Length: 159
Image 1 (tube, one colour):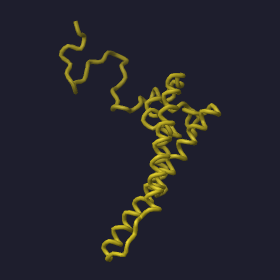
Image 2: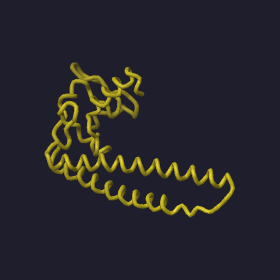
Image 3: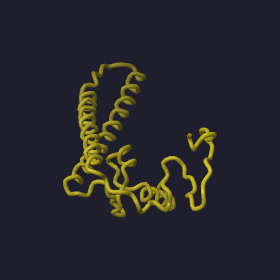
């Protein structure tokens, strides 16, 4: 017999004494923040593969964008054509800069595999946690430390 019988989606299952309060999806219980486990060998290999795959995609994208910038095929046209070309060129340039920045972050993460620091928060030295690294394998900080940095930036007027 299913112990959860009668508990539907969105219902709250009864808790016994000493049960921890529910947290939102993806949120860490404050009691477990210091308890992020180290990455397993399989997790590290999965993350390295994700980084290498994303790096190859970025290199191809960067090459394509650079070719597009070189080959604008500009012909003399009216002002509207010129404005459209300038807008497209500016957008392509911003996307290229974004890709180059992300490539730098990925290269940094891959280098951390070599020195044995991959998966550790650069701010606290604590493990970052597999769920965060799986969604953003180039992450430099734990969720908690990143949130702290963002709060500090807002108080300084940075955001």
